[in-house]
Amino acid sequence: MKRIRIIHVLHRLGAGGTELALQRVIAGLDLQHFENIICTVAPLAPGWGSDFNCISLERDGRKTGSLVADFARLFLRLKPDIVHSRNWGAIEAVVAAKLARVPRVIHSEHGRDIHTMNGDPWRRRLFRRFAYGLADEVFAVSRELREHYSAQVGIAPARMGLIPNGVDTKRFCPDDDARIRMRSQLGISAGSSIVGTVGRLDPVKDHNTLLHAAGELGKSGKNVHVVIVGNGPEREVLQTRVAASPELRGRVHLAGESAQPEHWLNAFDVFVLPSLSEGMSNTLLEAMATALPCVVTDVGANPDLVEDGASGYLVSTRDAGAIADCVLQLARDPKLCARMGQCGRRKVQREFSMARMVENYTRLYTLGNHLPVRQAALSGA
Image (cartoon, rainbow, N blue to C red; front, side, top):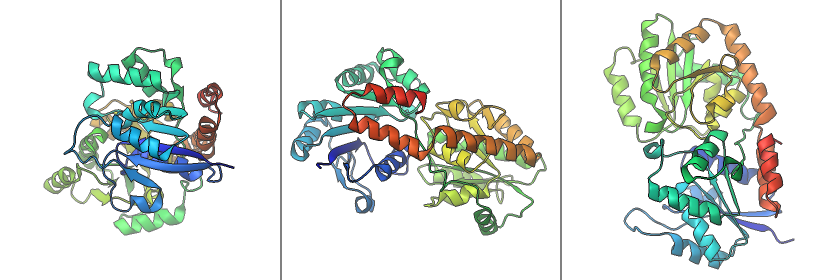
């Protein structure tokens, strides 16, 4: 039986949530039925081509202009059955796929650019509307993103599908051994509380507000440490700030990037996500699956995931005081922590499992009539 050849198009491959979700989808799809090729606009980082079938248009910023012709030549040569582009940086692949007569063209939205969080320039809105009209299927990973982009291009939200991200609840789960090992590695005693976050050190994640909250926690007299796992363009700025502050030195730990975030999550008592904008955060799903109470900003899909007062707390963006207050409340009440953490894990198991996500994508890629996929995704089936 001929496999369905899918070209997944992104701007670049890195440590972001979109790339992580793509890796999970490819890992879950049946390789007897699907052939997956990843195409990036930007040059591939070292090592990516070894784990996946990857190609690149090699646009490194020096060459500008439309990507349509480059994409079209590639699609004519590789003859995919499906082209699936993700986010604005790859949206020109929709036009190219139609010109190359690719049988099925899909586009999905996984987040927002920090520079256009509150709205796109009118030229971008017009092109996005044009591309949405050409695609056979358009969907978002959260209701908030669906509402945002449908409003930006002037279409009814019902015209966009919804396929949420999923998480491996066997990999991301409570692990006492990992907790003891990681806390020992940090040199933090069992009686201390650890507030942590995992993700790319990018301005949109607003780690600066978390550092402000860490300063407030330091004044409280409670023995609370903050651990930030990840790497990115903000790392040097954060390191400088921590080193310059007596309240943060020795209390804030920048752990760097990790291939095993599940171990770090088990070291935490509370997970904090202070982002200014989110699509559907994979690290938040992972923290919930690890049975951590979560303090998150009221943006993106966060309110769909965290039930305020039940599995964690929702706070406004840039509100360091609210983050510190929520963390202190949880640090003083271990039973509340445990109860909220278990509530979050049950929600992820019920609604955001890896199996459910892969099933939705399998339907998306195999059904000629995409309406059942949209209905299934909206209902969480």
